[in-house]
Image (cartoon, rainbow over all chains, first blue to last red; front, side):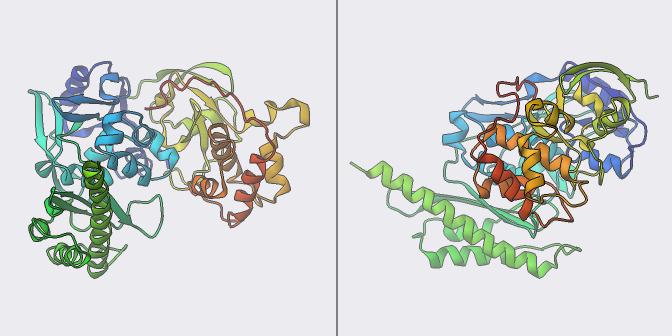
Length: 297
Length: 175
């Protein structure tokens, strides 16, 4: 099908975009890469009266350091992160390019943007998972000016966010390097959104015990969730397979999985356990390698 | 409510200045306004990939791009392939390879696969079978079962041919 008619604007500044979004109110949509919005428009599942195409806002594109954090502009494409040469990303957050590769197929990654994916807030989307896992801050320009929303408060449900009419997501900041973080996901078809995705970070102390850890799961509930109990269980422990397995079991047990035509709740729970185990193992391997590097003469 | 949007783009090297209804897709403008009907439109929801064209050298689903978003870009469609290779008859080496390897039956998806393959071979002229499989997984073909398509692209990696503008400007590829 073809989209219903809409007014189209292509502002040159973020302020202009926010002004347009504010004037149109809740019936306007931001158009970034269009890889989520255009399928919805073509199927007439959404009928905005206006699209505000933000492609010309060059300041929203690309990565950079900001007060020790890594800032990813909202218009940075998945492909740009996948291919990035930015050492802050490659060394500090290698999980970003690795995750970018998991998204869709190349034609989607070339157009689709990090900001678009975050604002679309699909419960299984990879960037939403990483934002929650790594306690990212989301920068928003609204009618009242600039503000920051922590990832834990940004996602309010399936395809629901804390963004209000008139708001433009301008970027996401990952507050610190997380060189050992890893992501694992599973779906019946590569290139589609996964059924479940798991992210984890294990940091080993000099004594070889787990000094810090994070676990988050996407696709299971209506938004990505951290797994506090499993994190607690790991903290201070000796990273043996049995402990990791125990944590993965706890992470899965804590969940209230959704059921839909793609998978029943129990299957999502099983996936959550398996994928948490895998991603913990992957992160541990990285952390061990770093520890060995650091202690090598 | 929907004022036409001015649009300047190059299609297969030819510059065009148009005014388009903002809701029209790049695919529709290529087919109807520019007469480039080689690009086929399957699902219009970004699932099948048959409408894949190159925008600034990158493969893009032209049903998931408004024509207005293509302002200032260089678009390449399947029509550009044969003409780029006038010395060897109608078809370029990738197209010939599709024919020789039986990589099409009904042919509807073929333009999309050719453009995917073109983008891959330009960036990775010696792509291996795993890379090719990963690349063509973006598009659907209901006839061939894919093996022949992978064979065709793989065979094209052995011809040593170049597949188009190597130093093409990539600006704006990152939309």
